[in-house]
Structure formats: structure tokens, C-alpha cells
Image (tube, rainbow, N blue to C red; front, side, top):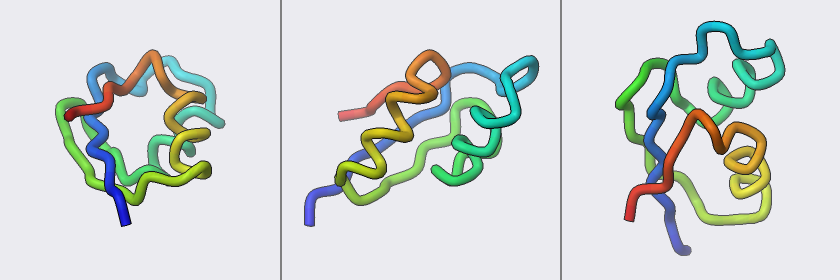
Length: 58
């Protein structure tokens, strides 16, 4: 299966609780942390929700 790397670029401080929970569900706990997840519709939806806090690393 294809994977995607996601990097948290900004802090979660000041973000609404649903965005904080989305970051936690992605496995991101602190800035500059990179996780590798399966590339599927669920993951893409979570990335879209917090797109201003994360970047997709190629």
C-alpha cells in the first residue's frame, strides 16, 4: 500500500479542540515531528482539516 509522510509545521497552541484531536489521531504531538501513514481517503481528510498546521513531505 502507498504511504504518505506528514510533518507538523506549526504548533497546536490556540487551535480548536477538534483540530488538536485530529493531530493526535494522525500521531503528531509536537512541531517538526514526521509520521508515515497509509495514503487513503481517511488520512487525506484529516490532512485537509489541519492543512494549515501540517505539510506533506515527499
